[in-house]
Length: 75
Image (cartoon, rainbow, N blue to C red; front, side, top):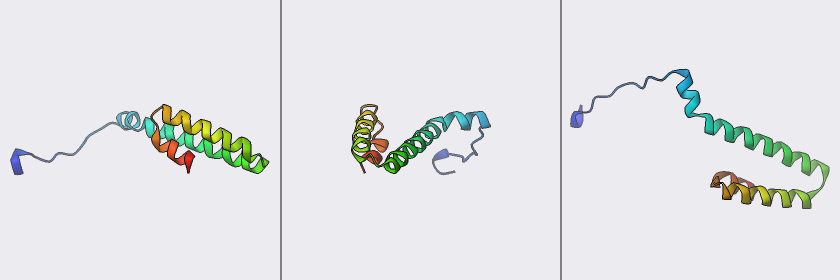
């Protein structure tokens, strides 16, 4: 009870938790689809087209301020 603060458990409904994690869920879905497209392109053997597409996606992610995705695409 330091500084007059009493610890309390967080109580949230399932809907509140789902709402708060929707961004992370959407990002995971988007990354899964991107990985699938990448593996399909490499399997097809079209590396030049793959590099061009990844560069475009990286720039789009950076423009959308999604720097984690942009860095993953860069790497």
